[in-house]
Length: 399
Image 1 (cartoon, rainbow, N blue to C red):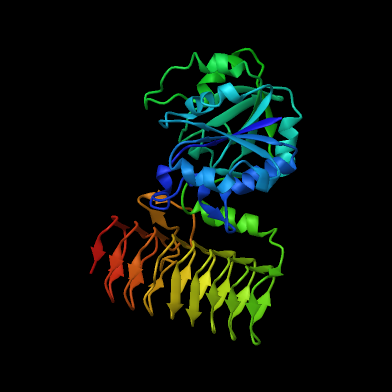
Image 2 (tube, one colour):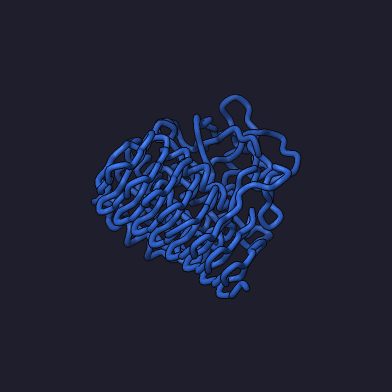
């Protein structure tokens, strides 16, 4: 069976993390989220993939290639302009040969759920019972049939949502051809499904587990979930006097220096230097060629490649892009005094512990302080002793 992965979008809500990479290439446990999805579908039995690409598509093409590294076949279709999910799927039409699976590229799904959908009769939609259905389009059901798709609402009729996983026959493209543009100028796949719903043909399959990765802080939850299956492995050098507790993976060429204490789950990439006397805990992923130095503490964070926190730094519950450098003594706060949930640009993260979202190539001077919920775009320079809060535009200097 073929599987179409919708991977064309930038992910505007993920800015500034998507300034230099498409959303589906953001790392979870040190692998792009699309990697996890492709591997889950492969393990469910898929051998032919079609990746619909668009924004910064070369990054996806370079990483996945022809699929041989994953023991699958991968073809590509390009969505020239990001005009909705129906338009994205239409880009793959000429490559479809029969019944096929469709997966949104920005989610985490398990192999067993994918296999179960593959075993159904098309058309079928994966549905999930969410504790925040107002963030999604709600789904109403009657038995195993989908009876309605409801736009986002402050008071949704159902806690079941559309999970972005489908099984279709090629006739879906006839329905897509009849879809008109939405008020936003996009062509939505859910509009094409209306005919199936009216005919009572669309079934819903309840997923056992599912994670949407729509906002930067969702990366923390997804990263933690995927690290639950981390297999302890040390391919680098661990000096005497290092403590590794729980599931900790250390990549090739990395050195963990004496006095460092790491509590897993934790994934450390290749050619990193950690320590001496560093402390890492709480589902942290550290990309390749990073330096986590003396007296630095990292807690429950995602750090991309080539970033340095070399001495006396604290980073908690945060996402940091590539090529950043933290001056000595620079720290990121992650807890309000009143213990209220942290808001970022007016949106509630629903997290009491939430640090910062930091783009690529951000440079901090010594002894800087970054407040909870701060978003720092790429190529920002922060002067020594500066206090940083709110939204910082790309390429600016904070004094």
